[in-house]
Image (cartoon, rainbow, N blue to C red; front, side, top):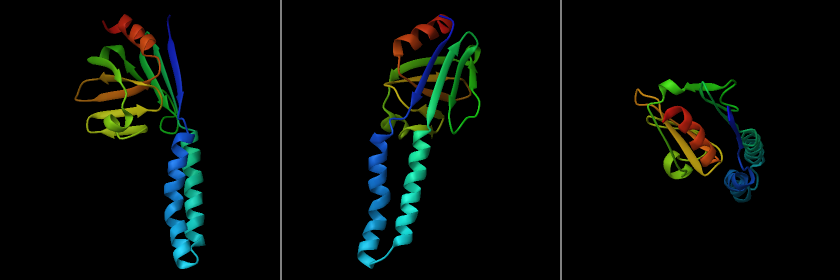
Length: 153
């Protein structure tokens, strides 16, 4: 195997329903209390639709090849970002806890960590030196582990 590629997308319905309830609850309550609030309702519906569109288009591609690890998260990156094998000081694949470790899904930054968390049960954490960690969610732990093992062990 000379290249490994994985594409991920957000599971939108599990996120849209709570967002919809949260986004619409306040304006509807204000509308019922004040006998109006149509502007607040229109703004909330617009915000909900924009959020849904953004979440629907959130995609991530991870490609591993002989030069390094390439990743792109749609909406954030227009082109692939590359981490050459030579810059990776340490790496680990661990069970993913998106909320606990990174505060949620999407592009997340917590101190020295940058996380690109979309889908999958595992997280590939790459120590690239200078106190920087890049975390990428992955679906197929075994394939990623085997591929990285060829270049970094």
